[in-house]
Length: 220
Length: 233
Image (cartoon, rainbow over all chains, first blue to last red):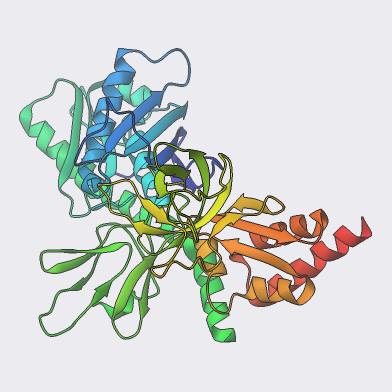
């Protein structure tokens, strides 16, 4: 049971403070982060940063479903960002769906997390998300495609922290309680692939910096 | 502290050390103490300056004000007895009228909206808006104040600004061997350059922007290339 091929591109947008494109197979989401920046007085919180998420679907105007996704993403990000270090500021995250081939919510969560790390917002950890589709037959599929999601009895999305604790849990559909816990344990082991991927992509991104540093030091 | 992690890439949440009663540690940006563990809060390269200063090198674009740092700001307003200055942080900073060399209540400094100021941050904490001054404790300006309109200001990443402020910055050494110019670097990623001609100013600013990820030998080549192409044009 494995994920589709993951791919990630960082700092792709010039104007924002940090950005990332994250792909699970064909599903592709771009996340842009601005912050810590100015916040409107009616939205400011005295002791924490205000996290604003805007989710833009591939086609059509954002509606209620998009607002629900924004709330899930905002709560996930609040769990990992050290908001108390930037009171009365705002951290704005904008997500744009480029292509949806299933596992959209985990792809969005992962794109958010990588974009936040790219920006340099202080975080207490990172979040790795995976989806698990439970078919009518009871079979569990990790990182389902759109077709597999549409034929499933339930689609569960879980976000895990560094220590594999659950940060986010989201479910559409109905399944038995034991199935929920078995899907959760499959997702938990699959999330390690995502966290290893974060580490290898951070090492690739910083490889030029490190080689430049070591070259300059050896020349001194 | 985990010595094997020094020089390698860490992610937020990675434990980089433990607190021991007998060892004094200095924690810089990107690392913080959580009970008895030292934890990374940013994704970057874990660095050590011997004997005991640890931090995470990360190249951010957004500036977070820290007291005693020098920044370049743009004047955006004159509320009350202060100037409001945009230094790129989440809130605009305040600079009192009297914090200029030789300024008194009668003798106001000649600063207009849109002027560039090179100043020092006197107060910076997460709960208040930052405050700036253009004098030191004894009333001397040491080069701080309005930057002349003949110069050109451009923005770069915070990492490049820190490199430029290092003692032995290779790009500035290479450029100063070829041009004569005046430069002011703000820790907020703003760089102001002034030289004899517009071509030279543009050349210098392009060289600085290009030099961010180049090694010392590559910098010389890049500068030579740009100078040659400018002169042939």
